[in-house]
Length: 130
Image 1 (cartoon, rainbow, N blue to C red):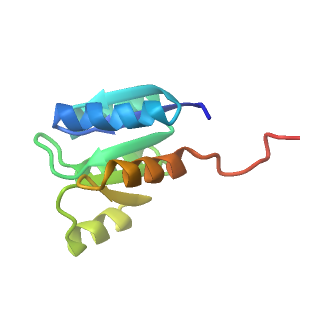
Image 2 (cartoon, rainbow, N blue to C red; image 1 turned 90 degrees about the vertical axis):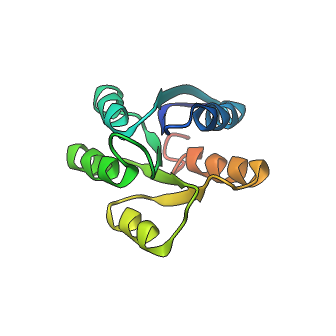
C-alpha cells in the first residue's frame, strides 16, 4: 500500500519525529512533513494542507491543544491525532472536544504503533474502485 497524501508530524523531540516518520514510511507513506513546535506546525499545515496531522500535546512556543484549536479554525475538517507521553483524562477530553480523531501514547510498542498508524492510512471507502 502506498499512501500518497501528506502527513505532518509535529513534535518538539527530533527523535520522536524521526521514529514516527520511519514507521509511516514503512507503511507506504511517501510525503512526511515535520515541525518542531505548534507554531511551525500551524504554518506548515496552512501552507501544505496535509491529509493527516500527528500532533504532540506538550511542546514549547505553542502547545498541541492550542495548535489543534487553530488548525480547526483554519480547516474544520482537518484530521488530527494527538501524540502524548502523559495521557490524563482531562487532556484527552480537551483534545476530543477540540476535534482530535484520537490519541496515541508515545510509549506504545512499535508493533501497536504501526498497527494504529496503518489504520489511519487506510482509505475511508472503496468509491475509487470499479
